[in-house]
Length: 259
Image (cartoon, helix red, strand yellow):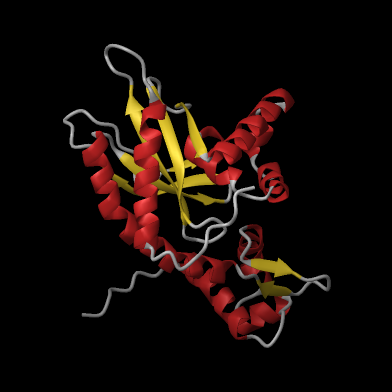
């Protein structure tokens, strides 16, 4: 049965523009684009500006527009992400059974951490992070771990575009830089949660650095009624789980050497 059609004029306009540029032999001016999609300049101006601001279009020195590689980059991420989740899912289930804790897998998307998979604790009282949830990378242990494996120049360029980073102030930024460098050395990121009180997070790397098959594998632990949280006790189980996931990925890609 064919899918029902529900017209979405604004979306259709944007897709028309992208498709027109995709089949064009070269960059197109605003007037050329308007002619290609059968619309007026004023009608497409705001849509072109939006696509440019989101990184899908780039304006050349002469004023003409061309597609960037952002769509290609998005498409390239889909298969590796699915492969990573397929490899991780059974091992994360085993990790939750062994530790009694929920665990989750996250990727860096710009300056945000995105949760792509989770496995919940078998316990009746448990903490779980929503799949698809987005969090400022600098305010999560997983985000800081993923930032730590970037070249320092690339990391600082990325953070320079992050409003959450700029809002920290110079002193706090220096402290955070030291934290990220320490994580780069130890390959472990752990701290009390900056999002939820009474929670400690521990994360390690999972997969192959420098490829789309690299993520953070993390556990968030609720504070016990008695005693203290000891997030470091989870480092070894997390590392063993990450190693099993890497083995499931086939080991055909070599991880980047530790700096």
